[in-house]
Amino acid sequence: MIPADSKSSGNDSHALAAAPDSVIFDAVGDALVVTDATRQIVRANRAAARLFGCPAQTLVNSDLARLVPNAAELGDLWQAASVPRNAEVHALSYDGRAFPATLTIGAMPGGGHVVCIRDVTDIAIAQRQLVNRSLRDGLTGLPTRGLFLEQVDHALARRRAGNATGEVAVVCLGIDRFKLVNDSLGYPAGDELLAETAGRMAAELGPGVPIARLGGDEFGILVDGVGRKGEAVVAAERALGIFSNAFAIAERSLLVGASLGIAFAAPEDDLAAQTLLSNADVSMHRAKKAGGGRIEIFEPARHGEALGLLEIELALRDALQRGEFELAYQPILDMQRGSLRGVEALLRWNRENGASVPPSIFIPIAEKSGLIVQIGEWVMRRACAQMKVWRDRYGAAAPEYVAVNLSAKQIDRTDVPALVRRVLADTGLDARHLELELTESTVVENPAVGQSVLQEVVALGVSLAIDDFGTGQSALSLLPRLPLAKLKIDRSFVARMDVESESFEIVRLIVSLAQALGMRTVAEGIERESQIKLLRSLGCAHGQGYFFHRPMPASGIERLCASPTPTPNRSIAAAD
Ligand code: C2E
Ligand code: MG
Ligand code: MG
Image (cartoon, rainbow, N blue to C red; front, side, top):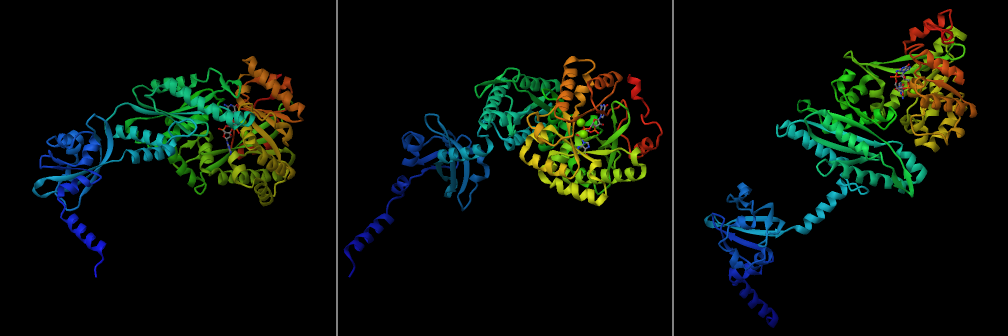
């Protein structure tokens, strides 16, 4: 026996199966319209009327283009096909509101089509939020590095395709001594400074100039289509100008500076966006190194290199194996007696193609890529082995120490005390003949790790010096806690100390600071006798510079050791 309800359901099924198409058509939740071969709407269901905000009858006889303006551009989607096909479009409601929609087009007999239109506004909003989250920096609301690279790429592609003229310029801006703000006032203050910088940059440069937060304290500016290089420089100067007013951060008034680097790509350059950005970045770091608060322009020709920095990085990877590195040694003299005290080992890269790349270009690339770890180990080995030969051959006439530059990355990535121990054991050099030079920022950026590493190294008998003192982030508060033997006064102060009272004052302060802390001072970059006189009067212990000697090959140092006169070519006495 068949149950009553099943019987009735059988009847309903029958009724449903026999329902007229128009009923089904109107019951469908998605908007459906049927068009003829010329894409005139011949039928529209209720959902379509709801979606477009007018009676179904109003839709009939109108052109589909009235609802989907670019429907005609969907090309082969209108070709007869057994499987319905989708397209993303913008649809237009009857009152003129545009909304994102998906069209599904199915072919009908006789050349017509049935078109299903779905409003995907919600999906689009969700997608945009997701994308924004990865492409926008949460703190400043600016595009991130990834999006910025896309924008640069787009600008370069338009040049290649001949759709735009002029050069593309990328400006990289870094806040000077940003870490100091973070360390002394706390991270929220650092965040405030970044957000305020972003706001000022956007207000100064306006909506037509794309800006981005590249990471940390670095910002990018894209100047798309510069007729003259001056236009990009003007944009950079305006960005630098926003730092002339103090920032109100953490209830204080802070004056901070910035360093900017600019790189250009001419239409014929065929540079990748990443290369252009890293060129600007290197110039920015050069500006920082030169004391900050300035703009540097990347000029490949200046370095005899027509290559982008990425290419330099690739070549750098092979340079060790190819034996392209060499060490030059610059004598460090006793300022009072003029005798040779030590030498600083300075790396030289002479490429196979005959070009020689300056350390100010390749060292930052080696640091960024991590190659500095192997290269730094090579330098230490080579310098110690050379020193051992000199000590054995010339005894007391040999330099007392060789100074080797150590980069911050080496401290981060290598067990420096173990490396020093190994190198000294392998070369047989006594630890007291080795000195390591670190910059202030190396110490400041990693005070805890840095301090324990430095203690260990000093325990081995090696001495430490702070290089380029006075230019980087100030290590003043850390100095008394570090086992340092020397402060090397940066060349920029020595260069002006005999012509500018402010620089003289700084040198005087550094020398007395070192004396108070029981350290010695080494003046870098001495080029004139007048500087020697002043340095001697201040009691600066050691000095190096072109006035005495330029960096030279090992054979040059050997000639000095063998020479009977302790004070070479130009006598210190001449300064008296
Ligand atoms: P630095 O350690 O401060 O080295 C001193 C720089 O000043 C050298 O430049 C030297 O040639 C230059 N100099 C010396 N006296 C004078 C002078 O009287 N006038 C002028 N105008 N310059 C003078 P260089 O060799 O180009 O090296 C630049 C920097 O590259 C070094 O600065 C150091 O920071 C880095 N560097 C060089 N070799 C190495 C290395 O083996 N490892 C690491 N990590 N960095 C290195
Ligand atoms: Mg040095
Ligand atoms: Mg130096």
